[in-house]
Length: 305
Ligand code: PSU
Ligand code: MN
Image (cartoon, rainbow, N blue to C red; front, side, top):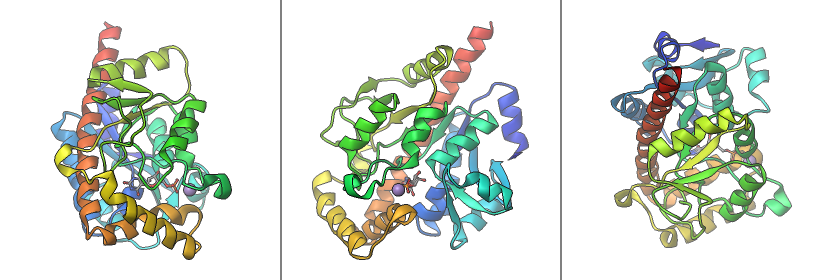
């Protein structure tokens, strides 16, 4: 594993660090907005008093913290592998390069000693999963790996009701910030009640620490609604999503290709507005994650006396 000096020092000194994923750069957004967003998100985290650590596998090494050049190269690269729990070790062993999904980023974060991770939206249970069995490995990872993941809910292309059911079965706390409804990525509302609610970063940090003290496996999903001014209403998106799903089915898109295909389709159908919203929500999540990481660092420092 290769951890930058800045990240190593911050962890050693108990200062807040926030992990970031790289699949959002390679598969989630087009170039150059992907690299611009990756930089902006790192700046947001620094402005919030934490150190950013973007995670990726580069030539067989799990990296925590990327240089400007590495970010740029990843953002321009074509056909980068999309790594999850199933394939990250194989990529490392074969000296390969790949972008980490939420699941693989949680694994990298834990290896580096990072407890908080900011992203856009997690993967979940796809619509029609009762036939396709397409359920993201992100959900299992949340059940196993002790990292709090800040996301704007799960993408509205998924079956959010089934996603929440699976998270409950797996024992993953789903904590929505400042509202009673679980958010739906581009929209603030999903129509579904959130299992838990918090109104401050401090509360989220406290439950993260208590879970660890109780020896409970796994992390937390912190659902942070997209800012009001950036949201696209669920009503407006519904037909766009329906069209994208129909196209995916007609073209036999399966497995890892599904999520990137749908995101790209929705990007074109909304003339880029879905991307503008995506950027706003990721940055909003980065700011909250920095705050949560700061609160966790504060709690740990106090308990050491
Ligand atoms: N959120 C985004 N864009 C993305 C993703 C999430 O705004 O590209 C990625 C994440 O890396 C997530 C992955 O882990 O999609 C889920 O893919 P799948 O459904 O194949 O598990
Ligand atoms: Mn899948």
